[in-house]
Image 1 (cartoon, rainbow, N blue to C red):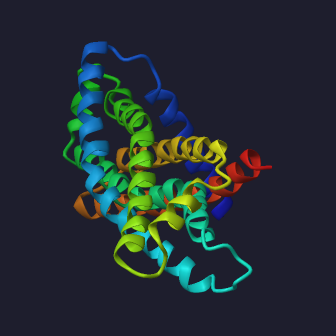
Image 2 (tube, rainbow, N blue to C red):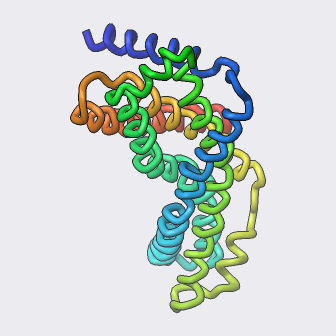
Image 3 (cartoon, rainbow, N blue to C red):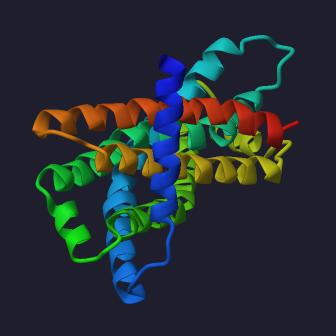
Length: 249
């Protein structure tokens, strides 16, 4: 029963995406809406990304230093480990799990409210492809701005570690910075950016689907918002495993 229900849900999602990715009726309107969504979904998320990344970078640096006490391990390993943790996992997977809560719930509740207040029905009556009109700008905007959020995350995470080195006696700044530079692999940056694009699509499309298919009233909008965050998080973790296997093998 659960498998059948999941397959039905997957089918509805596929048909919904097919409608969403049609050509816009008016490119000028699509462009304006995309810019608005970039500001709402992307730019407004920058403060959250900076605050979280700053503290996580500091915590990773502290934990690495406290747990690497062997004289056989070089002191710069703290910076190296911090860099690789941030590049490989935190700046993409963990960041997107956090953004699924903020951006995903925002998208689902916004579209769900439009559904229960019959604004989507009004668009359909006017002959507008409501799925394309409402959803495509969100998907394009969030995917397009996600690399910017990833770069902010990487930079502020490294800055958090630098503050620990500069204002504590756990590790010197020079050794921390040397660790950030040691054995650097450029592919790790591209790996994180590629993963983040997949995760951004998952967050925007899944949240839009749950919001668009709401039936009922305000209570169902809240449930749709919760389901959007839960399923986005599950799919992000699933694709994290798959993409890691494909990109790092």
